[in-house]
Length: 198
Length: 184
Image (tube, rainbow over all chains, first blue to last red):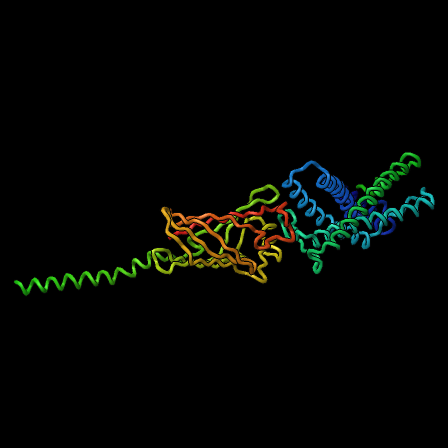
């Protein structure tokens, strides 16, 4: 009896996956929330290490942690993009207007772009920094510098500007992303969270 | 009897000379110390971002020919790639072009021919070469139960160490202390 039920549930969910799934792939969901947590940490640590009232030692340590976390996020983003390419995302809810569907696609494209540009511009900055400090990811493994740009002040400055500007755009897009979820939930009664949760 | 006395005298003189001849190189060797990282220690200490750090050179050798030798001399060669603090970030940065530049100058050299006897040991004046830059240094070596000990401060900027990264010693202290523990 139990076996039959389990089997039935499994086959129905497998069917869903094959046609049009109701939610994102489990791996995509996991990565979405892990990266979300990571991004919150990056915004907090990034702001605090630049503007916080810290001693030099604490500032240095926070920079190293920010770099380490950035590498892990970059790897997660690569996995996320790969998951997106190799799995079928759920179709957008039919209740959304054509305009909202277009805006949603644009917004998500922008979020992906920020997810890629943020860690890469950070990596360029670290690689071109006059300090030349290596990135030892949480004392675990060494993440290499991008070759050919060591101690390159103009490139470091450019990467810094991109990192900063992208962070501002990213923050705006995240606010829009959350705002859209709330808007659709309360005004159109469309529950979007269940697409991104198990 | 008289004959025997002459023989005894000869024997005594000969024995004395032989002893002196045998002893001379022993006394000579007593002034010379050949040492390296296995028994002795060259360590360094400074501050980064207000945090003290220290480390040691894990590969070096030195010869000390000390007064009263007429030709006193200290020669030391240090493998700069062997500088280890225990912090990977520091250790890898140290080898880079702006710091020890081990690719171009893998060794540090110290040479001195000016060594004065002092009450507690020696006063050494010599030349240290790092990154191809030579500076004159002076420091005291003091007798200890095991051998000799000394301490000297190095102005890293005088050797262009970290000149591009931190010319104002905002992060890494300008003066680095070297501690020498020479075991006889």
